[in-house]
Image (cartoon, rainbow, N blue to C red; front, side, top):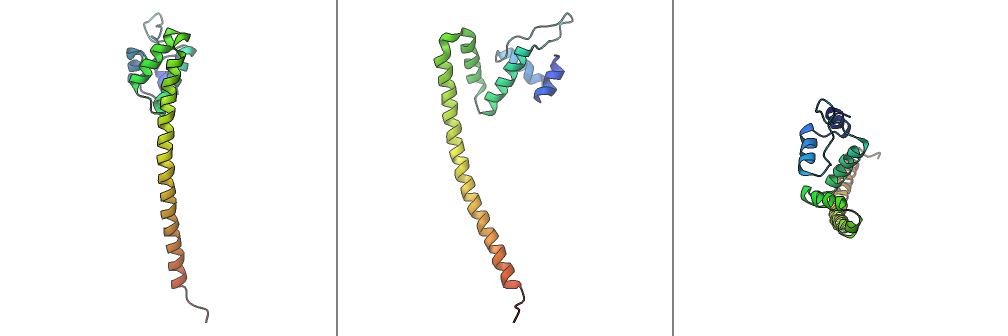
Length: 128
């Protein structure tokens, strides 16, 4: 698969794909006979995984560390797991903050809804 197709498939710029390769968060992409990058299925997996890590807030530096550990093999599993556990902890912390904000927002919205109902009841003509 060519870089333009990969870019569209993952909704990521060509420059970002080149950057990921240059800094080592995805493997070096093999080239075809014309010198163009030719992404394999395994390369696409790495791009998908890097994007998932980025969406979860993992820094590029931590991804570089993580990928370096993956390349070192099975002996680094505990270190890799520690990186993921730390990010999970951070995500849970963020979720707690978001959940708290949503509770307050829902309470405020409820107050506005009650205000509108009360206003409508006070402006309706009485049936007397």
